[in-house]
Amino acid sequence: MSVLICGGAGYIGSHNVRTFMAHGENVIVVDNLVTGHRASVPSSVRFYEGDIRNGEILDKIFTENQIDAVIHFCACSLVGESVEKPLKYFDNNVWGMISLLEAMQRNNINKIIFSSSAATYGEPEKIPILETAPTNPTNPYGESKRMMEIMMKWLSNVSNIKYVSLRYFNVAGAWHDGSIGEDHKCETHLIPLILQVPLGKRDHVTVFGNDYPTKDGTCIRDYVHVCDIADAHVLALEYLRNGGESNIFNLGSGDGYSVMEMITAAEKASGQKIKLEIGARRAGDPARLVADSHKAREILKWSPKFTDMAEIIATAWKWHKAHPNGF
Ligand code: NAD
Ligand code: UDP
Image 1: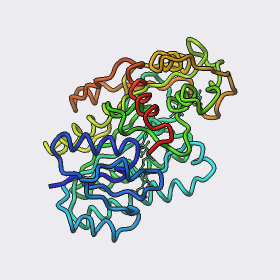
Image 2: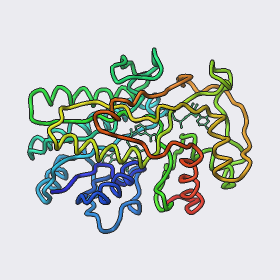
Image 3: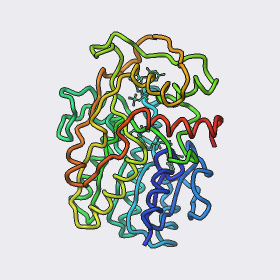
């Protein structure tokens, strides 16, 4: 039996491909390469270049392979762009999920692990955030992720499909040997942007606001290593294979780091001073987002291995230094 990784050529998907392979799974990948990279997937993996909104391609994959479960990473995931182009997000993310679930039903595939996001919560009422917290997304991206969860919930009530939705907080870092990592042409994430300074690709990093009600005035986020995220997917699949019920889990470290602390950790990881400028707040940024991940630790027995921020950033630094222009 094989595991189908949808979006396996992307940042998080490609780390999952390697992690599932390391656990002895036979992995198949489908990806339209819109933001993913063919080179991030080992050549030994059966790779289908295609769009999951195309049911015929999915039927072909499910017919040509014995698929036991689907791990679903495909999405457009830029918050700012989602506000500008909401329909693009509902088309790719929501319609993509409908197409995938329909194909799973047609082909009798009954397990799916889904990449959800902290963006489903919106502005939190309480920190740390529990899975039971209200979901009030503040942008179309977060709304699309919540809609995808809701579709799985209602479908699982009337079918044999079981799902695990993993709500990631801020995913960071790269594969230990620096061979794969984050390579988004339109980069908005803090760590790659900070590291562009010591790489000589930008003069400084802009801190989006230092007047938040936090210890140093900059926003606090919960960063978790991409390999720890991948481990959680392996555990989530084991959970479903062992008869676990459909469920939702937060994935975060439980520790919050401010933007200023991240810059300091990046200086330690890169061994270089990083120039910064204080800029305006970015619209829609909550001051503090930190996960309560006890549920994943207790039920999935998930235990993130990376706890030191400089160590997490050091893995990203190894990747960026070796591949300054990406794949
Ligand atoms: P990514 O853009 O690197 O990966 C997404 C992959 O899916 C890409 O390879 C892309 O080409 C592919 N894809 C997109 N739409 C497709 C379609 N319709 N058909 C086939 N392939 C398609 O993004 P990422 O950072 O690796 O994120 C992976 C998932 O995790 C996304 O669903 C994202 O919303 C979610 N997520 C990411 C973070 C983060 O910090 N990076 C946080 C929370 C949730
Ligand atoms: N951030 C920043 N400067 C940048 C990019 C991001 O100060 O150039 C801040 C951003 O305001 C947020 C944190 O860094 O508080 C993490 O942002 P990112 O876009 O990486 O992830 P998000 O939390 O938005 O998903």
